[in-house]
Length: 129
Image 1: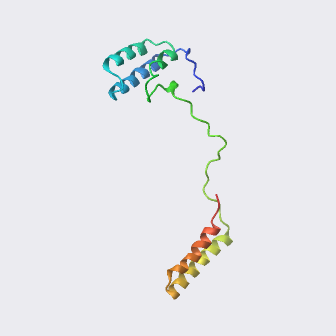
Image 2 (image 1 turned 90 degrees about the vertical axis):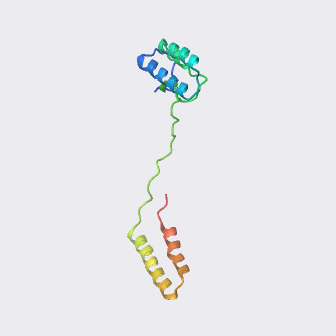
Image 3 (image 1 turned 90 degrees about the horizontal axis):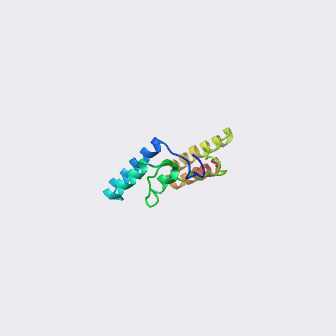
């Protein structure tokens, strides 16, 4: 798709058929009356350029012919989001030890608040994005 479609570019049967089909959708949605639809469909069937079709959709919302849709916006230099980083053996061991120790202490003292310690350690040592 071009960034700036020229209204003077000639169209073919596929573009005319798409325009008539989309005008039918607007008729079904109640945006066009039967007489207005008939007039626009006739003009779409005899259209020669993109500009001829574009004039038929000026006052209508989506759907529109493909060439009338705005080009997708560039995403810029945004890097794709990656899954979190990896952990080394020492970090994994520390987290595991804290959970085992926290569970054992929580069982002995019968206080589940002790489980906050391994939770905090896990959050502090987790991989950063």
